[in-house]
Length: 552
Image 1 (tube, rainbow, N blue to C red):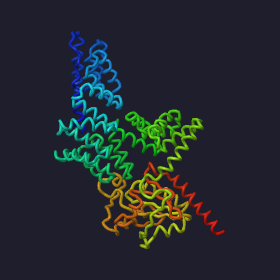
Image 2: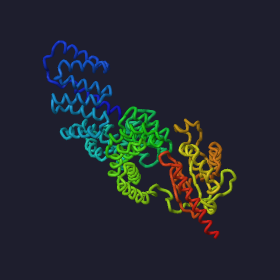
Image 3: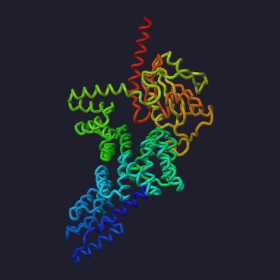
Image 4: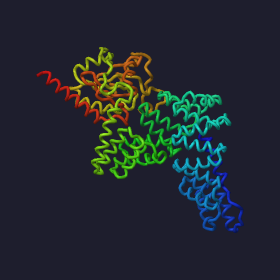
């Protein structure tokens, strides 16, 4: 797709190199103009820009000078300056479609997708049959997440240009993101019929990603990257898939690769910003989240992320409009209301703070069980599994009869589980005599293949072929992580893992009556040791009080 999109962009830019009418030029001006164009043709853009600036001093009425300077500035990445030059050219030659198109492209490259989309849409309205403009508008809409608009724009073009891979690619991606898989499949098939290609593997990975099969999606994305690592959106999707498999380090690396090639990618800016925000790297996160808001100003996630980042930097006044925008765009987001309440508190707005906290509490009660698996205040599924060391059967019932249970699911190849191990051991040191801790060893998150997390950690673990190998993996995990609590091994049918929707890693706090009182994923974005300890402390205290009452 990058080859196709760039060929359009370069052709459009170069086509506008001399839109001005003929005019008698002074010899010095003509000589300098030839020199500037030769420097531009040779790729010596900085020198060419200086030459065009000198030409402007000699005669500022030449449209070609402004346009060619703008083209050179785009090549230098100085997009705002280029936009100014296109504006000057437009004043001299109003309503020229070539200048208008190049201006829209400059806005797109500058990351102002909203303005670029507006200008592409105006060009499309003026020339609805120009397929190149339609594709550029569709590409801009695709970057902005306007998938329905992409579908409306490209469906008619597909009929007249059925063999255009750019149309099949963009249309297929938009349909997949709308979860219209059956409609996307023919476009994928069309690309596949033209032979193996990075675009085909990418679309196949996107289909797997949308279906929730993240490991398979990662495999397809990595395969596509071997063929064309700079394919637009590829590293962004790879990063999101890696994040969903519990590998934030590899995800961050993929997001950085995407941003190196496409600084305006929304998902890469947002997700990398969120990762850095969790790691308390607020200053670095701020620039990324600002970019995400600039690309999609209506996004509640981006506005909320930037608000939280600014709060972390103690910039409460600056954070307020972003938190308010997040609440307006996503009124059912408890996190957005909670963040806005915190901002109002620091701005000493007690009535507004109370209103937002009440709304956050109401939403929290409704949304806490949205993730599949046993919900808070519901019964935890019972199970009987073999202890990895003794082979004796351990059931949830026999554990909870003796007090609260900290039930942990994970595998050694899950980087999030390994990262959480120290916090879990610290919890065990403080509560191990008053609560029962148990690891349920489940499917490997990242068995050998091409996972960055396993390569970085020198892990060489193949998927277990049988129950005995799975037990060996559990024993190795407990040994290498120095886990002080017992481990049981889920069956090869992964039955307990499925009952708790626990892959790749998860934690549940269960009281002595068998009711789930807390649950969390072990991702960097979700796992907060202080929250776990707070709930566990209350459970232990309640159990102690209950026992005292019973003894009386």
